[in-house]
Image (cartoon, rainbow, N blue to C red; front, side, top):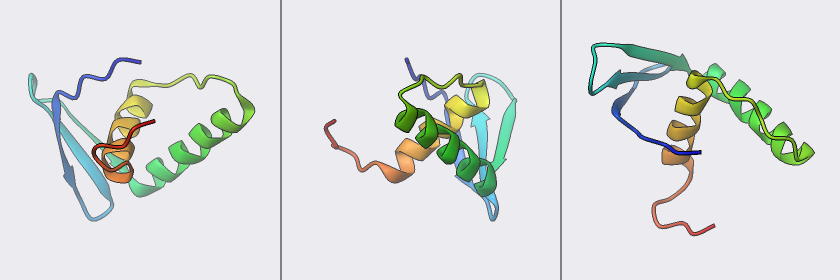
Length: 75
């Protein structure tokens, strides 16, 4: 999956707000949204089935990776 992070993410009290660089559009999601995504993602990894991701899921994956996976990690 190609990721093109054309947004600025700002942490809020309850989650994150993403402002896209090329438009005035914003997306917000809560920590609960991230927890639900993490569960759904981990279940897909355990089962070996590829997860169908929405655009919001893809954005959460980008944030999740930036927050949880240290820079320079090699897989």
